[in-house]
Image 1: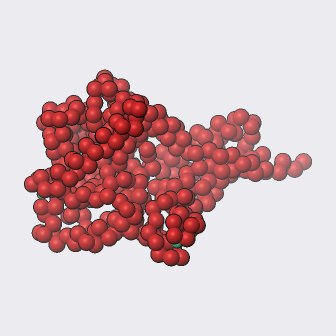
Image 2: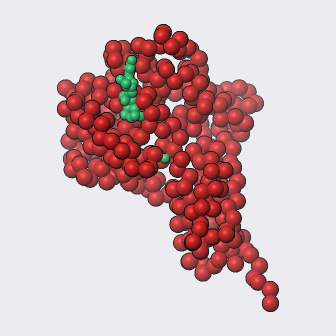
Image 3: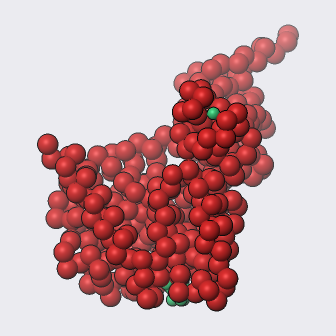
Length: 113
Length: 230
Ligand SMILES: Nc1nc2c(ncn2[C@@H]2O[C@H](COP(=O)(O)OP(=O)(O)OP(=O)(O)O)[C@@H](O)[C@H]2O)c(=O)[nH]1
Ligand SMILES: [Mg+2]
Ligand SMILES: [Zn+2]
Ligand SMILES: [Zn+2]
């Protein structure tokens, strides 16, 4: 379980940005790849806990899960996988480990006032 | 008076940026010194320390090797690894269930090893198949170990860690028959989550399968040296 330390890193990143903009943060928008090693529910929970007694207390975490996208050499196209247990092109069945998306772990936007 | 409208502002910040930067700096240093760095991850008890002790002992006559070992609380693994006569440094992680790049950086500094005098540096991560996948340690090669007693479906249950690794090692092969380990299914599952992944099947106890693996490491060191010392 490392979601708590991830939550604290989010708070660091966001606090810095909020101070710079002299703004209050209502919500933090996050992209979390399904292969990032972070579980969205656990992160929600840890974030709430870690925000207590910080200027971010009460802010929301809006998580967008990013599916796995690989490049299929046969189709010569990026393909979205619907399972992380099977790294095969869903269109033609060719195995591919050429990962293009799915490891993201980033803050993408803030709702501020 | 109404409160100001909330605004949505775009920011792009990688949350693990600090770890990624530290790892990148480490990798540059390691490459510059010509040392090939290998990390080992697995669930608790898959045989990392046993396999690593064997690796260190086997490589030591021909190569200069050293090891870092992460453990939550004890120095047991470091003591076992030190039997190989190789320099070993313990990283006590306390409550943290994985290694991070900054911990590797600090341990390398404290150990006062001259990286230029090393051929291989091994890093045993804390036994954990979940969070180590998120943290780059600056290694050249990440090995994920899977023991025959854990079952063939481990790769399907933990695709993230298998996906973050470069090589898989099936360990404790001497016990395969006793636990009716289905090696074909295990290999199929590994390929499903990480197509093209190289797999070694070994027993640290009998030494079976170790030669191929040791040759592979030697080969990778040669490649590293030929790309860095142009
Ligand atoms: N039969 C057999 N037993 C092994 C082999 N390798 C390791 N073991 C045993 O498996 C147990 C765990 O091995 P360790 O090397 O301590 O495993 P580890 O992955 O380092 O464990 P943690 O660091 O605690 O996660 C020990 O009792 C070892 O003796 C092997 O190849 N064959
Ligand atoms: Mg160990
Ligand atoms: Zn295809
Ligand atoms: Zn952890």
